[in-house]
Amino acid sequence: MIKKIVAITSSRADYSHLYWPLKLLEKEKSIELTILCFGPHMSPEYGETWQQIIKDGFKNVKTCECLLSSDTDVGMAKSLGLAILGLTDILADIRPDLMLIIADRYEMLAPANVALTMRIPIAHIEGGDVSEGAIDDAVRNALTKMSHIHFTPTELSKNRVLAMGEEPWRVHLSGAPSLDHLRRSSIPTKDEINQSFNIKTDDNLIVVAYHPVTMYEDSTKEQHELFAALSECNGNIVFCFPNADAGSHKIMQEVEAFCTKHSNAQMHTNLPAQTYWGLLQQADVMIGNSSSGIMETPSLKLPTINIGIRQKGREQAANIIDVKPNSQNIKEAIDLALTDDFNNGLSDLINPYGNGHAAEIIVKTLTQLEINNDLLFKQNIL
Image (cartoon, rainbow, N blue to C red; front, side, top):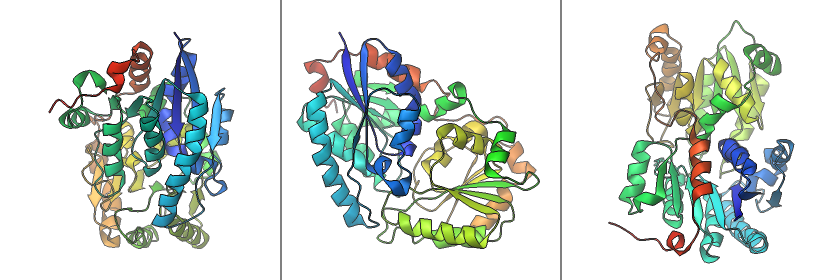
């Protein structure tokens, strides 16, 4: 029997995590896979990244445009409403047997709500994690309770999902699927990265991934301290675009102004996952408040400076240096991260988020899954 699975992706960030599970699912003869793109994927401001999915060879890709060109919390809420309207029509046409979603982005509440009302079972990747400084934390927990199958990134996150009353047979420890790129993808070499980014090889390379802090009314209140610290750095600085949250435009504007004033800095709207991993492999330090800094850099033993509250509570490895949003603290952390002593201390580092085998676990579970009333009718075992 063929299972119709629709995988939901809203941005370059979650697509890079889903890439290998989707590749393996598409190869399965028992699976009919549809990839449904919405939100920032469709936005020219964020690079119309849905087109990359086509370029990557996926055969059945559908789109739903719903993101307002806004920089406010009101715009976020209205985009969520538009997404529900658009996704309902598409999912009513597909009528999938199962929906696959990932992580904690606010826009994922839209497909989850549609699936819930249309009795479509949901498989959720990366539940049970914690990020107390963003609305993502509440979204992630809501998605967990709305979902029927769970793939958790760590043992601790698995235990959190079980503590929410989910039945053990529904909960699977997979690890974070973004790490599968290190095992499966062709990562650009050092020379290729240096050439692509015009990097001066004698200088340090700093990668910056900084996003709005959505728990604050002023979601960019911490950003100025970051730029003040970076202005004192002489190495190569590569900025990645922020998420499409309230305040993202203000961050973009400050990045653009910074790059105009500093010839050693550059900004990139979108980087393919393989290029991004190649950049991290060559970096000397990562700075920001991104989940990528917490979940992915331990696999590369890359010193990472985590600023402010956005990732508060998330499980961390020893390569993470937590700092308050203060320019002096950030600069001192950069100096520490570049020392031989700190880097030598990371030689035996193990990433708590997995070893790059998540896609196999996810796909094996979904292909063997029996979709029936037992799947839809959940019991709370607390």
